[in-house]
Length: 157
Image (cartoon, rainbow, N blue to C red; front, top):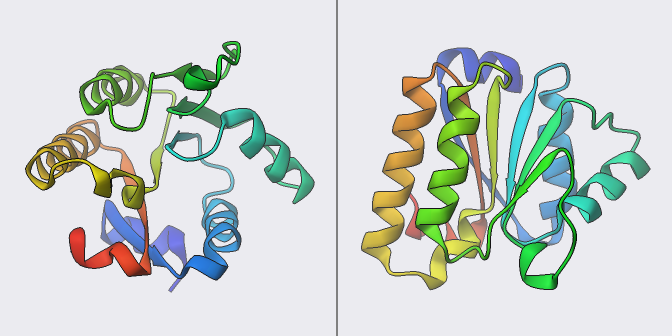
């Protein structure tokens, strides 16, 4: 089944990838979302690095907006197509960045990369955060794709 069809039937998806194929799998996911306006929440790579990698793979990035939890801690400068939050562990700050982005009508889908990065936070906090984001995605009539490493999947399923 194609990703587009899967998202019609299920507005929220958890994509579980093996570590050796993770980057390639995320690129494949993005290819499956081509033509959609995507808010890409990145917890482990800078928006600039992601854009560069995507362009190298001939992926058009003009429909992407980033919520970047890496660049600010590295002292990188803001980008027009990104919001920087202080760290992946700042769940409240992440939530406050995601909520208005979902509320605007500019985006069709939220791609959350990766839940595995959150495994260092308290389980109860992660569960609350995930529920909140999923509820926001659904309330706004958007689609959500959450990624996770296979080795961490038991924490999120």
